[in-house]
Length: 425
Image 1 (cartoon, rainbow, N blue to C red):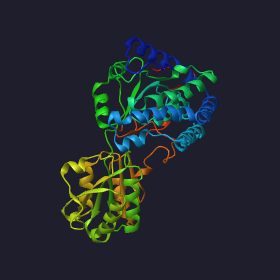
Image 2 (image 1 turned 60 degrees about the horizontal axis):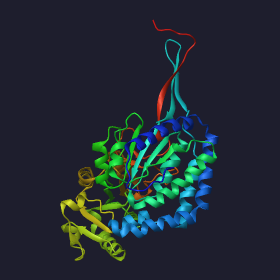
Image 3 (image 1 turned 120 degrees about the horizontal axis):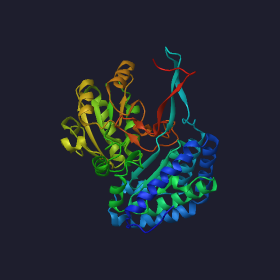
Image 4 (image 1 turned 120 degrees about the vertical axis):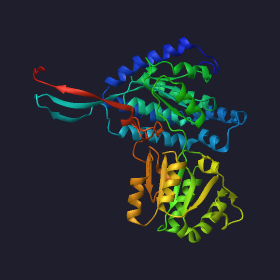
């Protein structure tokens, strides 16, 4: 894997990289599950063995972070330690243990003329992953692509440049040791935006682009690319505390969803509270948020419970804070909560806390989001938590994937027709 100096851009080199990745992807597409799984298990072991080298590279990125003006939440995304590397290795092993979707044939049915018609799941081809700050994405995206038989081009941000290269070196060594073409996982050797712009024109070499980062990056990619883009712009996630909620449970969901890791896309950004439970719930909720250092921006009703609550603006309900800040609104009824989510939500993660079974079922039906959760934290909308091993991203586009994208989302289907010499008349 090329590790040339950051900042250098050469369009011919990038085009050659993409073509080499496509060629390498064909070998992966033909590999059987046992061989791909052995590769992933070797990557996991090599990650653990390379912990010291990876952490040294990560320290270089962390030292440069203040110069990039990264927020505390973004630095948290960037930071690695031995436990996080161990968790990444565990995720790789979990992906290796998953059923391989490639080659699965479904819906095989006999048609009137006697032909058998079904569908076979196949790799997409070459994926271009464009991401910021999170070095773990280098591994997550690579192993999901490898297991699903795809080549992948990785373009990370300057914030994680050294960490990304350390991870890529491990993956490249494992590919070579397993007899695969190392070009199957290609890390772009520059963070120059011109390189990203060029990649987005290579529709003959790249089949899908997945941007993962801030809203500005994702909008730029989706507006510039000639290649299909899977995306989500932001995660404005709501917790609706219904009139029939248990206050203790609602408080736990609120604190976990907002404060566990406030800088991630499945963190809560807005709390909606039914007016009939506001007096019982909001005083304890506001006290718990204050204890965790969360700034609250609330509606007039919310402000009656605490002088510390800042008046909320319309922009606050649109905001993805990615910080210890939350917007709160008291709603008159269930339909008002739905209307608020429809207006301000981002189709990412929506949570209801209620002990009313019918209301829970209605929420599941009525709310349009990539994950709808009943009495469970928004933090569960994550590929690893949902049984995917890890994720390459969360899609809110619906075409062709909706929600966390695992192995199956990196494949498509082709028709398979089996006959005995039939011809069409």
